[in-house]
Image (tube, rainbow, N blue to C red; front, side, top):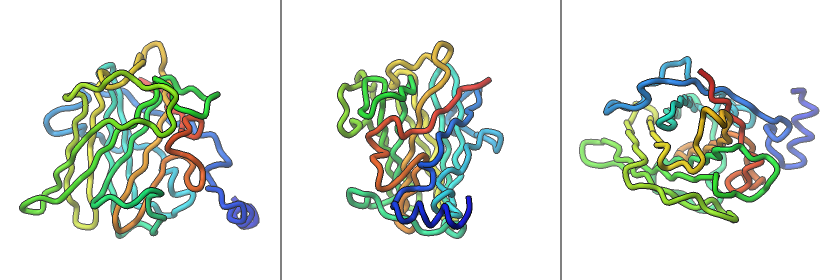
Length: 226
């Protein structure tokens, strides 16, 4: 991307990522989740799309799937990152992750339907400096319909402090995902919004000032491959 193009985008106040339609790959893994987490090596890493607008992003994201669900590993290194804007609606007390998943990757609508999901993962420090994660389902803003109820045991998370950041591994069971049929529908929509109190916000696809948290057409496409 040339400097002239970057200046033109800056004048429009749009993220550079808006110039592209992203499709990324997510590899199958079995077992997908154990008591130690997802244990995803570098071959499961997703492209660093936030670095288009915040270089370097300091973010390393890995993902895997199988018929049981989806697993993700997020790692923030503050010493390797440039600061970014804070969340649009207030700052959480600690690091957090908003994970958006469309199990059918519907591209021709701008409001979430029953196949669109939003999962909220938050972390707080407890005794001995450990990070205690919480996981919950939240409605996608302005959704026209909702997915089925999420069972209490359908979400899992493991968080760890690092010398200059933190890591968070999460598992989303298929029981939490309305319409998750990876053999029949091997492409999903994905958006993540990672917040760190020191660095601000990292958004996977698109970004401010666009409605990246409510419009599924702005989410990246993910092909579930073997």
